[in-house]
Image 1 (cartoon, chains in turn blue, brown):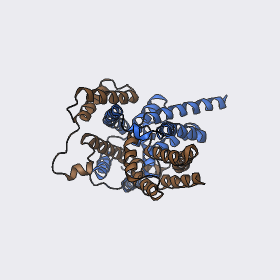
Image 2: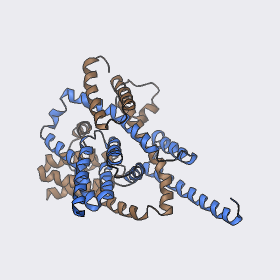
Image 3: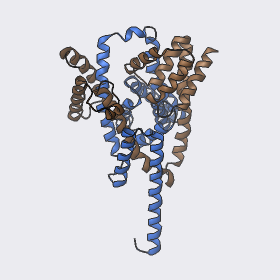
Image 4: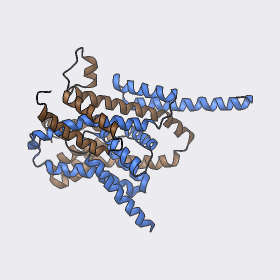
Length: 195
Length: 196
């Protein structure tokens, strides 16, 4: 009974990530809106805040973001086999498409209307990414700390091309410092008897 | 034996590139050119083609080189190689994460990192927007240039249209919006061929 449920879950994971893999054009970030819709809103496997943690991990670790996401969510949902089938699912559409295309790849480039289709998709995907960011952003409370970190990280990445890892390390340090200040305040408040 | 070389080469690429996606291109280029598996022109062409095929770039190029150099077994070896490092590392982290996510200091790190990730993704979206709207001019190039580069009006119209549709029907699945974007790309090319 329990095993059956797990197998069912793994099949759904596989199919979901195959769908995500098949409809992602133009790199890992284009995958975020699909992952958010499918795994948070549709299947309720993870929350928006899990997606944020996952993206932090994916940015800070080696490898392909799509694979990182599939492995992470698959593991959360159904353990090792969940991770395995989700990863297989997300890679399979690329693998099949490219294997077939490699036989006549240079002709593919010359199909005009196909390039028009993908010109359109590349433009539209920007809106999808922005929408997904707005949804995920609601996970961060509207306070000064979060707003400042958001703006600083955005500016550092967009305008001075700072290394992503450095930005994440600085943000992590800011989080730790904030926690230390909070603890200090609490212990001080407790000692004085008035907060 | 050749499959093994494909596997180890792409395993290294998967292991040593942080950030994913286009951050992987320099590393891929270096090792692929060093082995003589592709020329620079082929590589540039393939980047363009990869934009128009589903899935992550790193997986696409691994499969392509594997397939053209070593057939199906080569494609399997190269793809497995590029995926495996992510898979192993994330499995380890996911286990660690489940255990320690309630720890005060892990939580503290996350409170800092979460808003930063929102900022990072927003910046990625801005870069993608600029590259599309200014015909391939990067955000860096745009900031450095003194004149406004040529605008991709068709792209701009599509961005506006998808924005309106997504506001109007927020429940619409992103896949539909992707299909609508593609259709608009064709329609606008046919209807407004004079636009750049």
